[in-house]
Length: 319
Image (cartoon, rainbow, N blue to C red; front, top):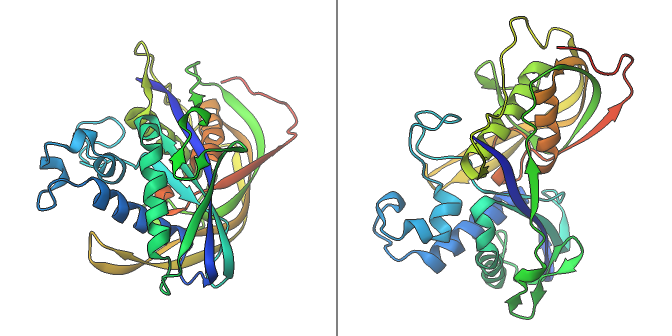
């Protein structure tokens, strides 16, 4: 089983030629232009499906955007596409006018090899213009932990700081915690078969576990076969977990090229609090998700969360 995930986080800056209206959720636009430019740059057989293309194993577009997988994976059984090995997020909001757009790009596992491809794709997209008005934008900076990677038309790969998340495979125990979770960008996952904001603590923590399990299996580095450690307790391990919410639902319009349809992509914003006992692996998964994003549609800019822990009487409970 995989238990270590390599990643990079880069801060991109676009400087617009004139004030630009952000007329849609900005990461929808950024994701779309990234895919379009990667495909334009790399696709050698435009009339063929990616999964049938003989070049797909080495193609930046195929790996990053199509993410084809076998249907027998543990985390996504029966599915032929995985989560994407990247995510984009920004705190810029629709309706604002700006001369500068700062956003963040995270790449996981083998996707790290494609740092220059992603950077040049955004550069070309900026030259063509962004948002409905097609305002031209110069890619002026790519920072990695404060270090500039962009020098004129070159990417200084040596300055990229590859970090690693290591999953703790110790046996699960029950842990008492008090956590305040803030949704920096909309949080979206299914609870009882539908997207909703009246979810309970168990549903949220299990969504975090699914996200971590999938990312470790799809893009993590192999170890000696040690299992991730998502065990099942004989009694309800979330029975002592309470939740309080100050949330609102937001919807943004998104056009899906794959489905050739416009749809509303919604999620929760605000803050909610968890307090009580839950499996240690669930709390660990929550900590992971503060870095890799929580829930679904993280490549669209959703699921960026911040977690603050408070004191809980009793510390750790025995499982």
